[in-house]
Image 1: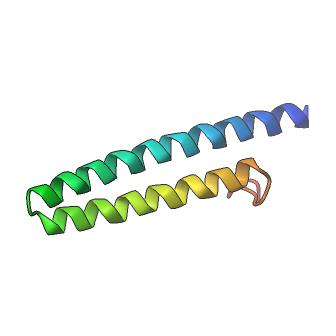
Image 2: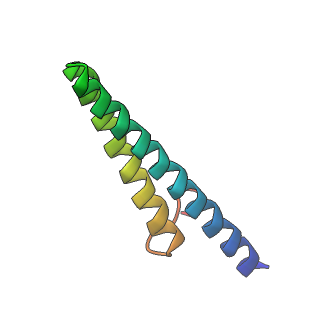
Length: 74
């Protein structure tokens, strides 16, 4: 039973990592567009949110690979 929970948890972590990477890609595209519009503040904001999404994806991958326990897992 514990193995099933572990597999399901890892699947959720991988899904979350993929979602976060998609969000990061979107934010990078928006930051690029902001640069084209000479909106440096917007570009800066979206660059920061892209970085945060990449960091979240990395954490989710670490959890899925067993490198760290999730917050709920202790």
